[in-house]
Amino acid sequence: MNLSLIFSQLGLSAKTSQDVMLFLVVALISFVYGMSVGRFKLITVLINSYVAVALLSVFPEKIFPDYSYELILFFGIIIVLTILGKKMFEIPLSGSGKGFLWRVFVMSFLEVMLMLSVMLSIVPKKIALEYVSASSYDYLVSPNFAFFWMLSPLLFMFLIHKKLLR
Image (tube, rainbow, N blue to C red; front, side, top):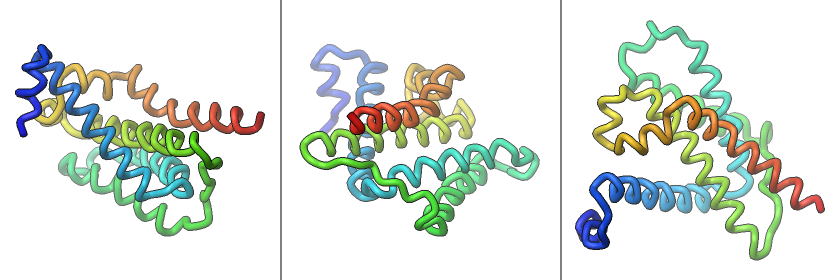
């Protein structure tokens, strides 16, 4: 099934269909990620992602001969901290009932977008544009949007926690 052909029949341009495909893929990955990681590890992985970004920012650039080593280190830090810190940052995404699933999905979506933003900021722009459109790249990597993707999971946690306390 050629989805770009379906989108073109709906009247979407090639760039727009590429953006829609990226959104659909990210939504699917977010759903699978949220269901596989679970509510207890979502916050843990988020904290570990922030730690990985902070550690990468202080590493000298001369250490990495290629961007792929930096990507491996980014995900390696997240994985190692998640495995070693089993009880260190385990903060559950609280709640249950009909509103619980959407909170898990939104949180996992924001985490996936944060990780995608970090990944694309590490990868050279020329290589990244082979996988995503220029507009999607800007939505993920430009300084304002990079700040948004870093801040949005924290804001979401704050809003959800505040709403649940009422």
